[in-house]
Length: 266
Length: 310
Image 1 (spheres, each protein chain N blue to C red):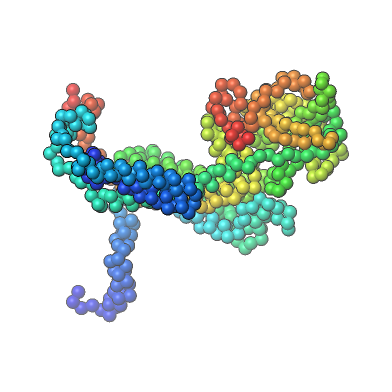
Image 2: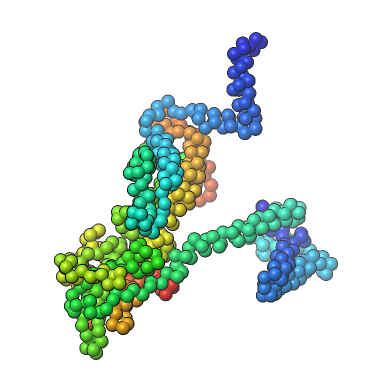
């Protein structure tokens, strides 16, 4: 570039120079390119977007949940003004008194179902497309852990409105855990914070729902997305285009030799 | 950390004993502040590890190093002869300073981690299992319980905790036993399937409703109890008649103090034969609804929390 226009110069100093400065120190631009500008098979379809949709649903849950936590109070004691439990009263206030509270709570409440449904659809897609096969086995395993953790979120979140449905559904859920052999009764007593649901149960479930389980879920999602980025998107089973990489030929050794077809073992 | 490095520890490299010695000294110093017992443990550790260290360090001086026959070592250390051949050729790596520092850092990190983690884990788990005794509940004068009729008693099991501790019991005055003692059948309302609230199947006499010292009493004409959640059905003694429950309804032990009925603790019931004052109750320690207390399935729950926490 022998002669640059003023405009080009301006762009360079205003945008590219700061980006260069950051990239030189953090490799952020390189990393972003690695993350976003990936090659994908030509014949991907909407089916491959279910994972991103689940991620979006999770982000909605995280944001709305964080905002709801500003107004929700996880206490089983009685609010002297309303004569009802504090937690239930605060949910009522969010739903009917606070501006747009009904919307944010509704997003969180229905978004929870959307998240779980999307997880299952995504899982079904991965299963039917055979996308869990080599080299993506670990992506599948982390995905299963995300599903289990997501359902734990559902279980702990269900108690928080502290109404009759929440109370008895959680009692049943806790006792269901209690029927597991050997350690079941101990697990149930741990979850309820005593032999039965008591004043400690609600804040305990709230802490698990707000802090502990997200602390598990978010790193799992991070690992899952890292693996997806690293290994690439699979093409559908009917595709003529190969995606990812081929499994390297197995080199039969010792006892395994006879088990591998065409390995020359006799 | 290769295997060869590990295997070389019994040759004359620097030894790991100083770490134990240092821990002993630290323990001793800590003990001077905390208690004599800790200090004594520190002395023992320091002396023991110090001796071991001294023995290690002076091995060369004390005795001649025996020439090591590769064959002998093969028997002692490694079953594979190829390994011994390789090990014999390689120069034995010394236990270097950097390895020592690495081990010390990791060990110290693990110790700090344990010191932080263990109390936190304990605080996570133990409060659910300690100080969980049920409080006695005073249901008021026994005159409020007509003979042969169930009364629904709603009370706070732990007044300090408030409404969340509200429990419901079905109380029936059985009159006197053959021995002339007063007898009550007191069933707990929680379904032993999964803990839903069991309801008496019969009309409640709301006219005769009473409130005695914060306890709500409502007589009911019921010969069976049903659970709204999954259809469990119990007879008037609490025995399962239909549905998914795995044992009979839980019962309370009770006492009568100054003519007042006092509920003591819950227990699980395997089966009840007979009725009223002459009923034979197979009693077990209280356990989570849904857990078997008798039969072969009870083997799945060998120890339940109430057996440990009392």
